Image (cartoon, rainbow, N blue to C red; front, side, top):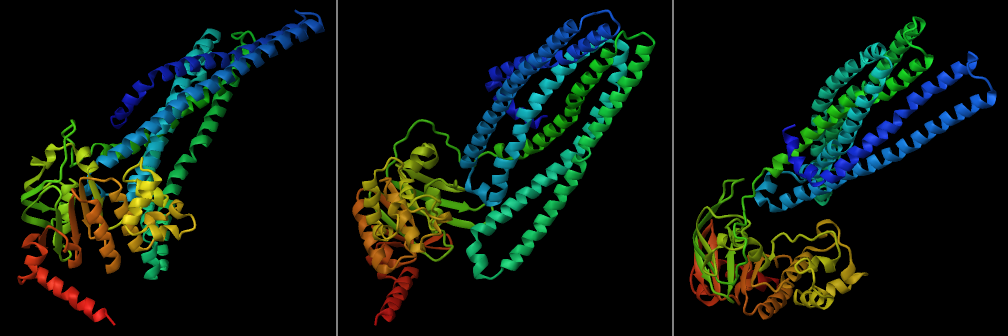
Length: 588
């Protein structure tokens, strides 16, 4: 139960609903227990009429009719309050499910990129869906049936002891046996359900990756192999499910068996007591049979509820593993801070935890507000890492990064990121309209603003050619579009924020040089007075930059302006000459 203590804050939040639910449950059980007592009265009336103690057929029928009306009335009232009980307590479980899913989702968003590198998307999705659903069963049905069981058991036993104490003792003997048996079943169910949940996570992760990478699977023609792998995984998952079902299948047969035994005990012991004169009416036996059938399910639910609690505890443990994961990047400054485009790197070094790659080694440079910096270098030289560190997606190992002459971790994290427009190397678009993908950078943007930035990104004409234009729904990750179109929509999304710092991570690699020239020209126009950092392989993307640095193996190997770097030997000149040669050879 230790893991489930996390839910206490939600139970306290909805305590008034739960208190009302408990009161309604007690009322519903009291009215439900009227039925056995009125059934006994029917037997008493029949006995009186049969023995001649009561004469007149009309009187007999009137008494029976009155008792039947009482039974129907009590049943209707009990049914109404049972409905209200479910509406009250089950609704609370849905509220808690909603709150818990939001808590998990919000925590997911706070966790750093390293967390997502170490955990699979399918597993994350399974914990926020399947695991939370199992926890809901604990704060819903399990809680409701527990209250119901305690209430019904206490009230029924009081009625039964007042009626026939000895018969009551014999009647309840099988009930603890039933509860213990189902408890043992529940422990086995707990073990097997934990394994089932683990395989559900594996299936979710496998299918999510397969669907996301379907183009690669088709391109390599490995559909049969992928299907075989899925078949093997699903076959194992099926077997684990069957192992669980085999144990669960014992639940109801065992309950029916013990119900029958309890009824036989009532009939045998009660019959002997009636013959010996210890019970004054056969109605008492009928009353006890109804009590036994009423009590058997609540007692059986003790084991069932135990199973739910154990499954919920296993699921909550999986959820807590993530909720207890502390974000590596923390917003330690709550008050708002001013962000300008002055950026300073002073002897910055950084190593990726997951790969142990030393991406940056003693990097130092300065950008003034309104300047443009171009970063060039071969793949893996550390270019993208610099942009990630400016957005505080990672924290540095050593050195210093300052924004507006203040340490980057002394800025409000939300303010910092709100003033940055970031175009990643891998353009990610959501399964939404093109318009909403652009407005993702600024939710309250007008349609005119969307069109304006789309024109600046040289993608407006492409969008207007679609049947629904800006209202076109994109496929997952923007699969509907070409690579160049995705990159340009990502640029529009960054531009619409009108941020103070613009970061472009090799975002023009999929467009032709003519379109690149137009986009760069538009960016230079709109970003005047803003700080721009452009990462790329093409020297052409750097020719309008105020400063250029060339990286190699995490170090700055060349530094200067476009003109000065052309005068020296080195990696930058090699890039320029290579690009010039390729451009000349491609001309007719």
